[in-house]
Length: 506
Image 1: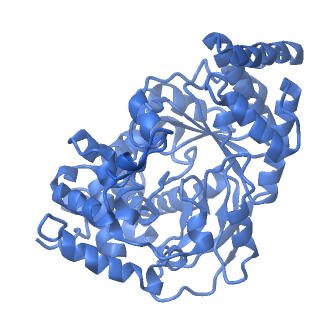
Image 2: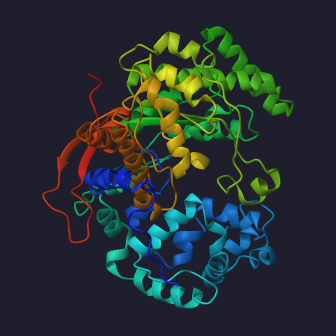
Image 3: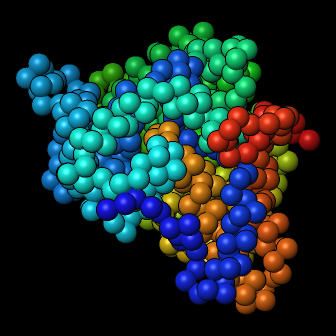
């Protein structure tokens, strides 16, 4: 069967509304892609090596893909996912499938993705980026593998060439505070590179005092910062020092994944005693979970305080149980597809933070959640009052077309469009970036077209809102500034690309 995504995919079924939606979509289809939160490894662009094969590019690194195949009984080893535990021996390593076998498995299960957001993204990647014109299947797997492997060896499919062809204006990564950012520095120093790849400060491993490896992580942070972390004030000083380093290398935001949004704001003495107690308990192997969680909340509160002082935007991802299956986590590590949504609460959890910083001009937070029930009940009202609060786009399980529409329905009538942070692709799969942004633009065009058809707004206002959602708002929410625009793109590029850096707090 041919692979031919419909040009009107995801637009409204009503022909009159679809006509409006088509015009709106075309008005933003060529905008530069602004990606202020994602997980692409900067090494990819710094080294600019060809992708070796389609399985390594499209299957193994994409936990949206691997988790669904795992649910249908496909072991992660058969999808190229490597073991990360200390027990992986030569025999177990032999279980790891070769890329061609991974691709055959993926193609043989292609129909399992019907109806999923992943299918939309995969079709767009294959058709629009990689120029595939036949459906993956068991019968076409080997032919496609050979065709794509040859194509990926061409210069136009190397990472930097694709970055330009995608029309990416800015790409933010997520980085450990102890990282020396060598790949970001290499890109910034390369005269042949004209893109913008910014680090994002992700300190979760140093804030989570419940984790068994927390003391070891503090030692690593101390080495990177040149500040001892043996006491509470030292840990805070080390985190502050690394934030300065990240800002110096272009970071505009921090990212935090916590079990809940709660924060503590203890006085210095009490915080110091709590730190000493938790660290001592780690040495004896008898950690009190409640103490450790309280310390974690205190450290998250310190991150909010620092953001109110240094202006780094605080992105907060909550409402998810990370690494739900302990066996898979031990065998393969994190980010392998078994994060599960939880109930979330924001109004009371964030009140101590917002009482201190909610109206401070330097402070800004972007709130993400996997719990749809809080969109209209808590998040929209919070963003509808506090100038510091922006609503993060639906992410992980909610970055699907219908979930995006539910989000718009839930928050717009209370908070409007302009308290949203735009769209973030939140992806490790490099070639899915344009596909995900395109999906969001189509969904938003359809949503706004219905408001036009219902005479809630006129089409010119809808076009302005749509452009804001995918251009101005992500820049504003994440403090990105348009520095310059290239005069022209090479053939095949989507649009001219802007350069962005941390905006002045004023």
